[in-house]
Length: 427
Image (cartoon, rainbow, N blue to C red; front, top):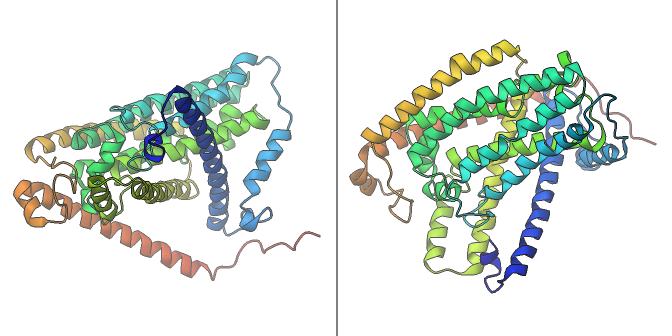
């Protein structure tokens, strides 16, 4: 990205200064993502429960999370008597650092990525995110609290279990794409909706949903929020935390939600590409005759599309949190071991056999073939054309049906009586 914006700048000190600047940018992204996610979830919860969400600090309550952050900074930082002071202090940072570092390889655009040449970028993100569990276990163990240790052990059991179907579902998609590089994955899906990896074959289509469910459990998101189940364990593994250390756990959770949603977008939903392939075609023409500012604006549009898709996945996760009840821990493990794990194994076997008998690797759209030229595609891979076209129509139909249902609910819900009326202004 530095070479794109400032090609004439080079040298060790320039690289160090640029990296320091990017660290500041990533810190800002994490802060904004956490702040806006907390506000959005509270507003969504209020809407679904026919009550008001935050509405006092800033327009429509947008600054409520900032006010809460300032309050947490001023709260007393307590350490329980008998706690392991070193591990108690270390745990929040072990939870916060992995999702923060994972932002390095997220492809917001063809060049809007810290390191685009990392050939195992997807594997690297998963390896980094797996460290987060250590923070949760240390938080529960070091707190000298039985509720905290119960929550930590639940998280260890739950996360380790669901990492297996999550990883297998990713392998299904990687087997179809043939690469672990997230930037290359974006280029392979640049031809339009029908070239997105989710529509590559039926097994990748099903792997998308397996990944989504497993990611909910891996991130402690409801209905799989057993590690912090307030109805049973007070607050679970972070019961004894206060002040900024408590805030670090919150930032870690919402940043991890953003990261796993971004992985799902990059892997299955076309990455930074639009459904019509216009951005991919624009980038193809710009790459043929490189002009710095044109490539820059392509990346800006790509980052906006990528962020919008990721936000939509995060919204669905929040939607489910306030819709579904919390299962028991034995039901959570049953869903993993008896349902998702066998399903992911079948999908992996089916996906590999499909790629062997119905090859679909045509290369990058616009560079190696014309994605909207049916005749050319039919000559190269007729089975791939039929499969991706049919799955694209099914996916488009499901999206249109869900959109219509949501619009209908939003329109008819305006006439419902709210449980709480808007309070009188202060003062």
